[in-house]
Image (cartoon, rainbow, N blue to C red; front, side):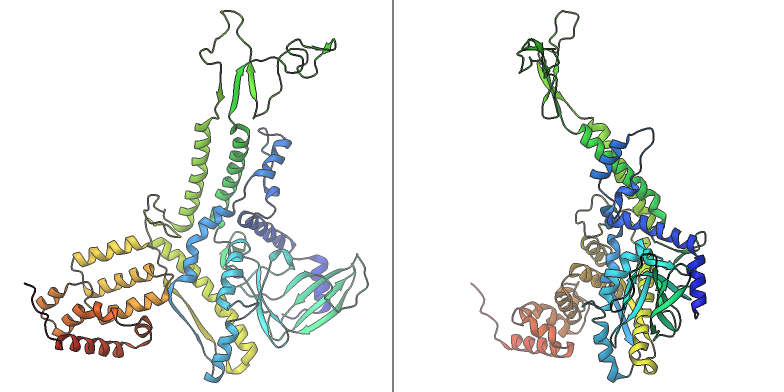
Length: 539
């Protein structure tokens, strides 16, 4: 779409999408509060009938936010960027492919495109789904940027994720000499052909800076891809747990005030005389200001003591043999509130992931042990698909910018082996498959999964173990089992001599040599060992 000056004036004056843009901004602001703590006090409202303004102010001052709630809820998504497998292909002439790969490795401020996705796209995908990824153009380069929905003045409701135009709230760009007029507003207008800064004085629109749009279309897409038919725009993947997050925030703030109000043990004891008037109630013939003439100490805080009058007759209760003690906080209420808050998180976790985590896991990993991994894998696949689309779109935009007609597209595939199950679970599965004499391909697949999980943070050791597996394809059997299976004798020897061979082989050789060279080296070692005379028997 191409906007004329008259079109821009009409949009700024009548603001046709004002209601939807405002709703989008309110939605994003609330999500941002939950996930970052920004503007937290604004969302801790007065609980009518139950609290006063002063208590609300204290709640706003001392209550924690929901940042850790969503951090724990989103922790499994780390697996999307750590998953095994996946590949990226650029359809370019070989001469340009290495240069383009280098550009992708540093798209902006030292971030590779994959790291940029994790740093900028992923958080905004959760708290600002109607924000934009905009391709900016600099000095002979282009790069992706995240544009918050809070900075948008107007854009049409999405028909797909691309836009006909977008108008941002703006300031006078550096280097543009404009008179200081507080009544003027500035906007950045991007359509299919131009990128303009315009000034609106309340009646007219004037273009004060204009650049060509090198892409030939609005170079932006919405961050989110989960369309809500009711709202008619894209929502967060956390949309279904917002109500639970609201309750979690409110209940947590109430518990915080409960702990502050009731969490200090208060000491009591029988009343003692006022330290100022010594029990007389008078100072210089006037009522003592410290005890108001009662003769007993009357002011205490949580570090002091509540004084109880000493019984004067048999009808008054006697606490003896206790002459002092402590008023303990209502621990049962405290514990129940804690349990309720914890249960809210469990409900949110189940709503998002479709399963629970085991609470008694003996080896809790970053995601713990899931009761059922299938729904987790399915949800993670949705996140991977969303990330693939955005990364592919950015790659295509960069490819067409730098190489125009020679760029023929790309294929971006994230890995799908998420390593959800922990090492202990995978080891038990592997040993069970071996004990049941399962088919070799089943055992091998489980062993690879086990290695991927065991050496998730050590790629070199993982490569080493894979090579050893290929050198000894019957790694799960004993040497005598190979003899009973009537397999080639050399396989038996490789199993028997593999360990002493490894002890004299540098790790660098194991990692750098191909399988053919390693197999030949092992067979040579076996021949030398077999050629040696047997050791004399020990008498």
